[in-house]
Image 1 (cartoon, rainbow, N blue to C red):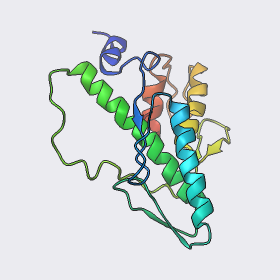
Image 2: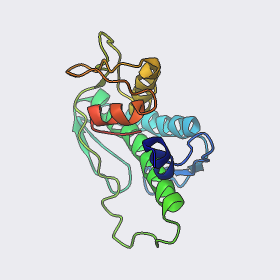
Image 3: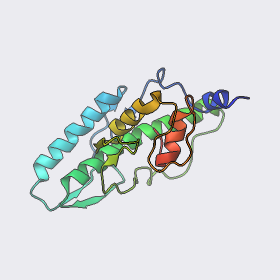
Image 4: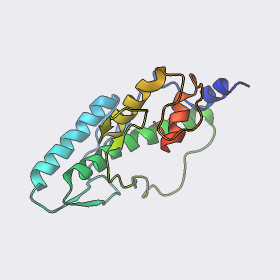
Length: 183
C-alpha cells in the first residue's frame, strides 16, 4: 500500500469535517461552535473581558477548566496560553474524529479527563524557520496556516535541515516532524 493511501486511512478529510468545539472558559460557559474562526472569536471575547477586568492584578489565572495556569506580569504570554487552549481543543477534536473514523468499534476512553487541558508552557511566539522567512505569531492556528503556505515548494527549507528532499505530498507530515507538533 502506498504511503499516500496509508495517510488517507489515518487522517479524516478536514475540508469535509464539521467541527463541534466546546468552550471551557470558566464554569459557566458551555458554548459549542461548528466554525473554527467563530470559536477563536468567542475565545478572544472571553480573553478580552478577563484582561480588561483584571489588568491591574499582577497575576493572571487561566480560567480554562482544569488548567489553573498562573501568568505573572506577562499579558502577551497569557494571551498566547489561552489561545493555545483553543488550538488544543481543535487538536483534541481532530484526534477524536480520527479515532472514530479509523476505529469505530473501539469504545471511548474511560480514563479521567481531569488532565485533558494541561498544555505546554509557551514562553515565546511561534517563529517560522523556513529559509529567510521572519514570520512570528502568538496564535498557533495562524502560525500553522502560515507554514502551510510554504507547501508549494518541493524542497524543504526549514532551517537546520541538512538534506534536501522532495516531499510534495508529505509536506505537512514532514513539517510536523520538524517542529514537533501537528495541526
